[in-house]
Image 1 (cartoon, helix red, strand yellow):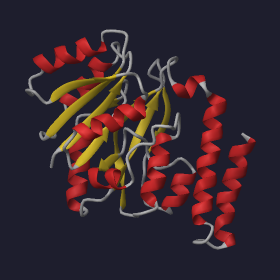
Image 2: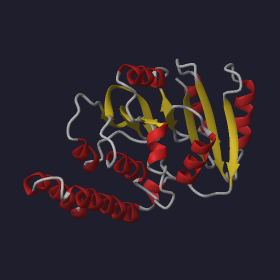
Image 3: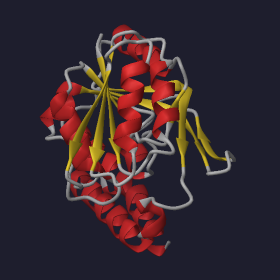
Image 4: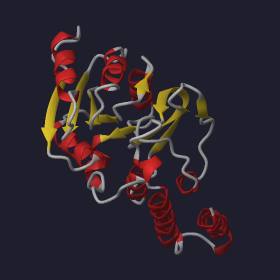
Length: 256
């Protein structure tokens, strides 16, 4: 089963080497790696091209460039250039442990090729300190998982190509909550989702340069707006009692 790894890159020369090293160490053989340079001003592309020429796995790494348009536009660009049945979206400063892709491919093959595999993960800060660990043990109400920002993340999940195409890819107008907006649109048409109990993903939070660090007010507005859309979608599908916990979580989010 071919898996396409898509990495948006913007001024990540200090990180892209370790990220690519973690991908090239995967125990799954059928990979293609597409790095989309989103108008970097440093030597990101030069570093990618050097790795592409010298890595022992042949020509599986390639770099394409675009005028700066943001990470979601870069993901969509890479997606259009890709050909894998499943997609591993990456951020250039995150790391996969060697079994991540192969393990989730095997899960997919054993479980009827689900539309989305939600992966367990670890989040670390710039010093390597663990900020959060999430291990999924059993599947609950997927809408509650979504509402509570508890359906993995861009990196830990494995996305089926056909479902990403069916919902129109990433919303390039969103500045945050992009993966949860994408999963919201996915859940509207399918519940064929598998939760992965094993953790092979490390998400790194940079001290600077991240939208999550620089636009907290705007992030909360988008966070609340998306959860309002979730409730609006469910209002004719759930009883008032069932919707109560959704409204409570929305209220708590607004209060924060």
